[in-house]
Image: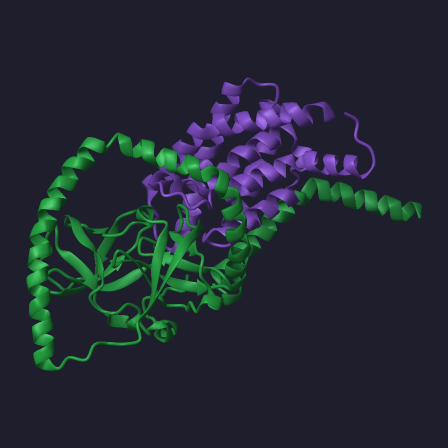
Length: 173
Length: 285
C-alpha cells in the first residue's frame, strides 16, 4: 500500500515516534493500579529496557531531548525526587550511546547480558542518589529485587521492540 | 547570508555534540529545584495527576483482565496455606464476635449512664484508586476524588476501618494518598494494652517500623497499634497494625491494610484537615 499526501506524513510521524511512544507507554504501565505487591516494584524501571533497545538500534529517533522529556514525565508522574529519573535516563543514554559500536550486530543474548551489566551499577547509583536526597538509606533489597526483575523481563520487552523495529523501522535505516 | 548559514551549521554541530551534557546539566538543576520542596512542584504534579489518571484508566482497561488473571494464578499456589490460616482466623473471629457483642452492650450501657455525646460531623467518601504513582522510592497512590468532590488535604484513608494513609495533595478530580508505608509517613501511635506512646514510620516496604518508644518500654509480638491522636493529623484509636517482630535493633509492625488489599478506599473527614499545615510529623515531601 502506498500512502500519499498528509496520510504519508502522519504515518511517517507515527513510525518515527515509535521509540518515544513505546517508552511512554512503558512509563504509563508503572501507573496501572495493579494489586500485586511484586509489580509495585517495577514502575519506571521498564523504560530502561526500551531506552536500551532504541538507543542501540535507532538513536536518531531517540535524541537527548526526547530522553530528557521522558525523564521529566517520569519525575512528575511518580513521587520521586524531581530530576532523579531525568538524570538517570540521560546518564543511561550517555553510557549506551558511547558503547553503541560494541553493541550493534550482536546476538540477543549478548544484548541481554550487556543490559544486565549496565543496569546493575545504574540502579545502585540511582538508589544511592535517592538515599542521599532522602538523607536516609532506602531499602537495598527492594532495589536488588527490582533490578533482577527488570533483567528477567528484558527478553519480553526487548523482543516486542525488536518486532516493531523489524516491521516498521529497519527499512528506513 | 552565507555567514549566517555557517553559524547555524556550527551551532547545530555543537548542539549535536554537547546536547546530552546540556540536558544532564538541566537534570542536575531539576534535582536542586526538587530539593527545595517548592509547593509549585507538588501543584504541577497533582495537576498532571488529573490527566495521567484519565490516560491510565483508558490504557488499563484491556489489561484489567490480565491483572486479575495473574493475581488469581499467584493466589492459587498459596491456596492450601491460605485455607489453613483462614480456618484459624475464623475460630479466633467467632470468639471475638461474642466478646465484642458483650463489650458493645456494656459500652452502650456506660455511654447512657454517662450521658456521652457522640462526636458529629464525620463525613465519608468512597473513591477508587486511579493510579499507583509510587515506586521504589515512595509509596503513594492517586485516588479518583478531588476538590470538586469536597476532598481536602488531611483526610484519613481507611479500608475495613484500618488506616491505609492520608491525603496529602488535592487536585481537581484526583488526590494523592500518602500510604503509611511511605518513607515520609510518621504517625504517633499507642502500643499494646499499656498504650505506650511511639511513632510508626514507613520505610518504602510493606513493613512499618516502630520508633521513639519511652526508655525501657516492653513491646511484644502481637501488640496492637492504634493512632494516638497526637499531632492532630489522625484521630485517636484508629487501627494501624500489630507488632510482627521485635529485635534489639528494630521493632517491625505489620499494617492491617496493605495497598494490595484493595482497589478503593474510604476517605474520612474528621475535621482535622486544618491542622495539617502545622503537622510536626510532616517532613515536607
